[in-house]
Length: 299
Ligand code: R1P
Ligand code: URA
Image (cartoon, rainbow, N blue to C red):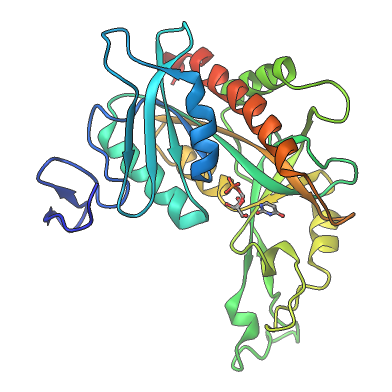
């Protein structure tokens, strides 16, 4: 869907075909059951589980000028529609996806995110980490880095990173996701670990990666996060916005999430590309089955 479209309504832009500004979708193209993934290759891999519609229409695919993609089809023999949406990275992109899909979908929605993440607990490389206990936002506090922020009256300097209170997944959708993951994933070193996810506003500073080129003041950040949130399992970059918007959706969106522990922060180890693809396939199928099983009328 091209960039040079005449938009109407500066408050919530739609083009002449009723397509949204960034996601590029209109009514009928995106399902009430949505799997959100970060990148195009994960979306492509998981599109193998989508079949043509019972009336013979092929699986639908759209790529917007901003790089978001939507693939809509029917899961297996269930006759239930699911859309795989490429959400890209960061809070703002998740905001575009949820707000613009909400605008063109009628009725209740269920959204599951399958991402990758930094694994915070030792021994959790390659596991699927599920924020069943909630999700906080860890974000940089620019005021702590400016000259004029000389500290408060009691002499405390402002903290360079702020940690919000948690937001929570829809319990029924999250439990369904856990059930499907337990069914699909290999026993043993693979498998799942539940806890709290920390969404961050940077892959680097607010995930405690040490940089020489910037003044980040994050040397103790991972230690602080684990001290304040002992059951923190993961660092990633979108789940907080998904769960927060769902909780502000006036009861119309159920959301849950999980992420594959791609990099273990304590040991500095990474999964191999082949291990990642295997886990994406298994966790992706589990997430789609959880979406299919979810009772939308419970919202
Ligand atoms: C950073 O590399 C990206 O990976 C994680 C983070 O949330 C961020 O988007 O998830 P995805 O693999 O889903 O993109
Ligand atoms: N995604 C993140 O946001 N952090 C990691 O360390 C790995 C994947």
